[in-house]
Image 1 (cartoon, rainbow, N blue to C red):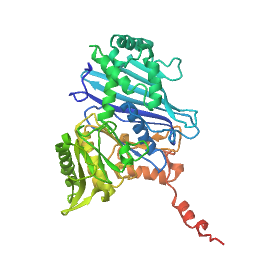
Image 2: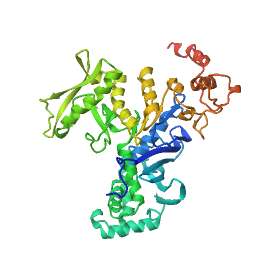
Image 3: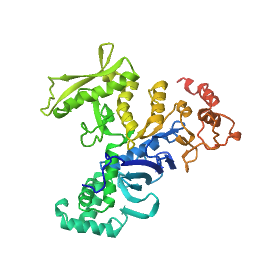
Length: 479
C-alpha cells in the first residue's frame, strides 16, 4: 500500500491550479488558472470567445494530458501541433492535500514529431516536481529527456534508488536487468505512444516501491495523480482526442462509481446508439441502478422523459459472461430508441451523473467543451447556480451562450484574445457593479478606440456579412 492515503479518504483531495500551453492548435502561448486555494467549495471557470479562437484547443489540451496521466495510448497528435512547429509543450499545476500534507504538483511535458514518413509523435521531455505548498525549497523531482544519452530519468540519486530496489525485487522486472529498465522504458513508451513517467510499467514500479517504505516518496504522488486522472478528472468533448467511445457511435456516460469501467474507458460507461448495450452478468443489478440514478435527475430536468432498458434474451452475439440491453427514452408511455433522441437529452444523460459527483466531491474536476450546446438556458442556469452556491468540485467549460456571464464573478471568466502570445485573458477594469455580459459585449462590439481590453477577439461585423451575402460570386452562371 502507498504510505499516503488514497483520494477516497476524508480530507484528501487534488485541485487543479493552472495550465500553460505552447504551440498547440491555434495557441502559440496561453494560460488559464483557477482559484484552487479554496479546497472545500466549488471553483468555476467559463471560457468565452469567437469560433476558432482557441476555446476547444484548451479542452483538447486537457484531454491529451489526462490520457498521458492515465498511462494509456494516445492517438496521433501531430494534427494538433501548431502549424510550422515541431513540438508542443504543456505545464499543469495542482494542489494536493493528503491528511496534513499540502503539496504543489507541477507537471511539464514536451511532445515532438518524428522525422520519419509517418511523423509519429513521442514524449520528448517530462518532468514532475512535488514541493511543499508553503516552501518551494522542500521538493522532490522526477525528470526524463529522450535527448539525453543514455535516456535515464533524473535525478540520478532517485534512479539509483529505484535500481537498488529492483535488484532486490526482481519479480517486477519481467526478467529485465535493472540497469536496462529505464532505457527499455523509452522504447516502450515511444512504441506504445504513452507517457514515459506514467507508463503502466513505471506505475507498477511506483506502487511496489511506495509500499516498501514508510517514508513519503515521490512515487506516492505519481500514483495519486494517476488515480486522480482515472477516477476524478473528466474531459467531455467531441474532438479527435476524446475517448474512443463517441467515435464508435456511443454515448459516454460518466458514472459515480467504477463498476462498469473496463480498461481504456476510465470512468465512462458506453450506451450504444447503433445497437444493444452489453453489461457483464455481475453488473446487471448495477446497470438498472445506473438507469434509476439517471432517471432520478432526468425527471427533474425533463419531467416527461426517462430512460428504460429491456434485456434481449435472444441475440446472435450473446455472451455467457453477460447480457445485452436495448436502451430507450420513454415519453408518455412510448419507448424511443436512444439513437433517435435529441442531442440535448443525450448530453443530459452524459453529464448528469458527473455533475452530481462534482457537486458533492471536492476532488472531481469536469472539463466540458460547449457546455451550453443543446441545453436550454434555464437548464444551464440551474446547473451553474446550484454548482456555484453549493458545489464542492471544479468545473471548467467553454460556452457560446453569454448568459452565464451574469452569474459568474470576473475571476471565474476567461476570454480568448487576438494575441497569439497570450491567448487567454481576463477583463480589465471591471467595477463591482458591472454586468460582465454587457461589459464584454460593449468591449467587442463597441468602438475599439474606447476599449480598455483591445486584445479581445471581435465578432464578425454585420457589414462584412452583408458584403458577402450581396456578392455576385455565387451567382455566376456557367456559360
